[in-house]
Length: 210
Length: 155
Image 1 (cartoon, chains in turn orange, green):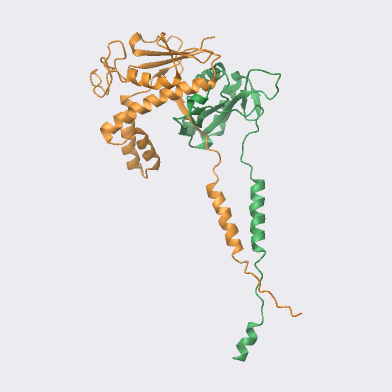
Image 2 (cartoon, rainbow over the protein chains, first blue to last red):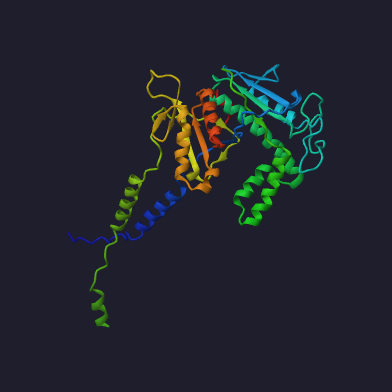
């Protein structure tokens, strides 16, 4: 039988395919990115430090007990899902006069949209969130509460930025990350800092209940 | 004309069929040898809580990680803290951070972040102990490592 020789398949491009695969995987593999809720701890205080006197109406008291139950303002049991709106309402209340800002005399909160309730906070820069947890509280619950507080601040800053800069706070942060060049970055940073100054995060975490 | 034909018959093309094999071998070699420097956990792999307001940690070289979780030995209860490759007491956290600082350039120290990877069933008491230790040595930037998700699944 006459054997016709089969033409050899050109395998030269196989290498290219392999390289393409190699590069594709190199690019797409993400080494599990670490993400989390970032917090800045308060600086350690000197032993003789005298804490300032704060009005009770400026403190939003959250207590989490060891059964992972939430108690706010010493009176109401709530669910985690209700927390954000309550925190927003408290910070944004604007019922009085705040601390002086950029050297200006103390003023009312002109950008607040809250109810201006006499019994709630005076001003966002006076409003303190106090998170009192128990040593036995589960970490998951603690993070949930921290997350809701963070969400409340992000919400308020978003509203503020939309009113003043026509973009949301989250969008600004995204832009900051993508911005090229120092000038562009500085311009966005100014806006972010402005939002942060109008809604500063003041969270106090006293010693846990033993 | 005939002269040219003769030349063509001369050298056979080098077979490149084995080139992909070589490339694949390289690919496999690198895949096997690359170790993503992940510390070997002496505790049970912490189940991170979920949250929505997450921020990506940048500058990975400036992050020191503290793990909190339960011991692999079932007879030991309570939370265990692990840094690098060993389980420590919470009072040793400061020593760990100071050692981490010593490895970095001085101007980078203020930007160092401590990432706490804790199990969602861990006790807040342990976390707050660590926080207090960090606060004392001015390691103020911390990040609670979480996954993206619904907060109602945390408890």
